Length: 98
Image (cartoon, rainbow, N blue to C red; front, side, top):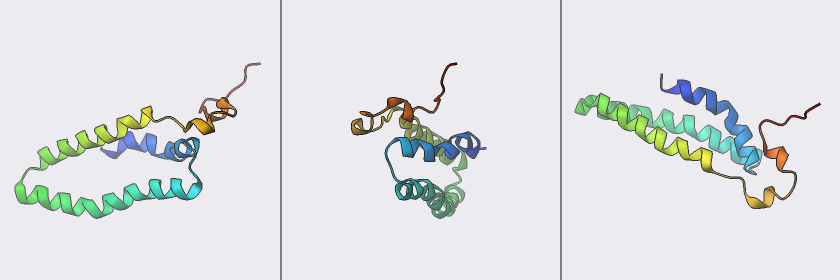
């Protein structure tokens, strides 16, 4: 259930990183690091939850940290040197009226 909201955002992260001026290697590293960190950290947090029997508290802390670190992504703007050209190329909703 936790990955459903992020599942709609995750496919668009590559486009977002491109709009931020990153190349394919940088974008790939950032996109690939999230599943790798989850793979390594899930057993650790699971064992802590089992040992302390605080599964609900750790779940709420995980949800709160996800919100705290994901919401600010919407406020990041592309670097100003990238906006001196055609500003419309950085819009996800490019269309022309007939």
